[in-house]
Length: 248
Length: 262
Image (cartoon, rainbow over all chains, first blue to last red; front, side):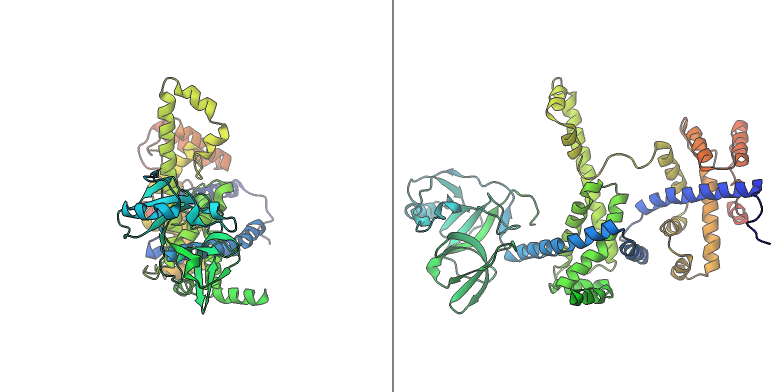
């Protein structure tokens, strides 16, 4: 005799109804129990690992595609932000407070007096983009006071354009450059490319008489310049960046 | 491509500790594996935390990248329970978002209560901008108020062990695995699960629960729609009419549930 042959009796209906309500209660209260779970409880580690494995194995087709699409972006983002952490360029999450210059003139004329007053003249990095134009000959009418803890020396503040150093520097950020610092690997420097104006780049490597300058944004290829002190303006020590903590 | 796949299959077998060690050495395969290993779990957690579906990928990616960067610092000790660590970081992030949304809402209300400001807010803010200002976590409740309260009351009526078992059961973990984790036999787990289900029912149908006006009726209606048998509901109605303060029994419970109540 087969057990599922007979018509359901009132008892069967009752039992089924009860079981259905219990199923619902398990789902309803189970969800709350999941919310009350303390993920850091060591007793729950096996359970959470099981859940993570299960979630990975039972992905829908659409989610699997999303996962595959996102992995390269994730790796790029993690690496770029790791590079930023290593670069040791301090971040000030605000706009710099610039004031009118105490002295009129080109950068080369006012640099010494600005350094004595512990200020840095501000310039747009893009103004000297044209071939043959020197940053030193640009007039600057605003100065930025140096942060308290910065060592004495000659500084210049530059407004950045372009996205080659994202996530370290964004379009419109201001950087503080200490002039004439020694070239170190992994430092961020402002350098003059012989036929392409001034650039902000990371020192990727120094090989013999050549210096490789790399961007943090993988879309930009590295640049190789001769190892000539006159081509390197200085090292970036600080950035005024208002683009959130994306690079923190 | 084939070589990459082979690496990823190997990476699948790495322990969490090994994975983080390799990430610290800037191994790309390890970073990929970290993403593959934890993103699906965080997607589930995000759905549980009621993150808006359109923003899910961004929220999870940001959180996972933050965790990865933190773990990749050599001075940071590697957590024993890495999955728990990652899930906890997403939960904290969502809790912060919720607090921020509440603050923004409070500021909005304060502005709206001002004499002319309400008109200004209405004119200046579009529906989309108001929704966007709520942040990635939706403020709509997941359940109807009566069910929300039912789940809270039933949750308060069960013990920590029962809650743990309930989590495992509702996550569809095989009973054999639960038996292995608890170090008991499969049959013992089966009995515990049956008892737990009866216990939930008993707590849910308890008449002297701290119900508010109208909630009991809403729940009767809910149970009726779920198919709770007429006889059980009649028994409840009789008890209610008597105004009996005694605890309700499950209508057709497992015999073990009776024992537990005594």
